[in-house]
Length: 98
Image 1 (cartoon, rainbow, N blue to C red):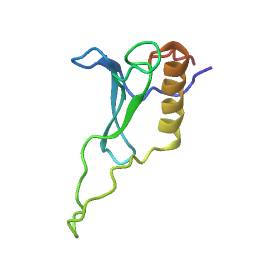
Image 2: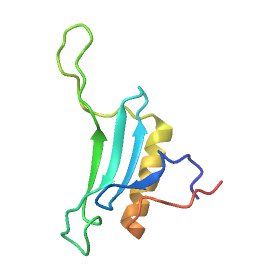
Image 3: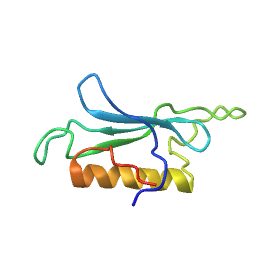
């Protein structure tokens, strides 16, 4: 039973692939997107893109910061649910049960 909140709304890219745009714990823009890679059955079911949208520079040193996401426990639980749904049903969208 999925009781956690979703990361965000499941939308479509201009090419018709699912995407969820969300912000990490520190408010950085991130996304989870189905890839057009077609190794298995159809495009959108073989791989995903996951990460931050923009690499920022440190406010003091100017050095690039890590492009990694910083997810809290609730966001990790939601990410797992979205990815499990993608593996099982070829969609990030899952029924949210309370």
